[in-house]
Length: 148
Ligand SMILES: [Zn+2]
Image (cartoon, rainbow, N blue to C red; front, side):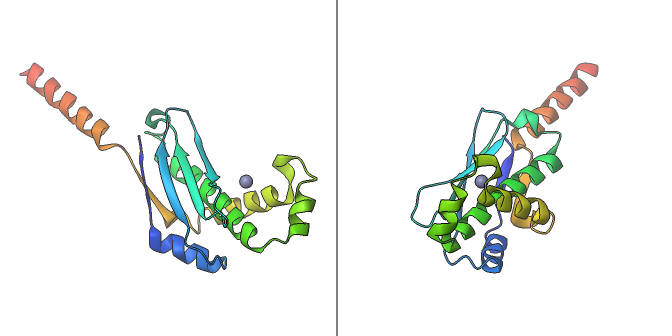
């Protein structure tokens, strides 16, 4: 698995900039399912984001890609947190008239994420698994031994 670490200070800064009053908690879950996904957990103010990060092998050599995808995904959910705090009942009623992918709430979250992925890049750090580095090292070592 790649290691995703949340920069709590940056996350607070983002929440402040969006006027989000509650602390946002990001829970990172490793999964065997490919890809990156996130969802808000059903708290009254929806401030808990569960981020699911898929298998390492699909990202191991594409850390930049993985980093951008994760930031984009998190920004999308953070925008939803802001919406849940600020949208009126009428706005949500209107939102329900659209199909999922194109509703105003989704469109706004997607647009915010796309526009801000570079600005808020440092909201997380992403690292390769230590284990694979170590196993590479140990196989390199064995090759050296064999060649002696
Ligand atoms: Zn969404």
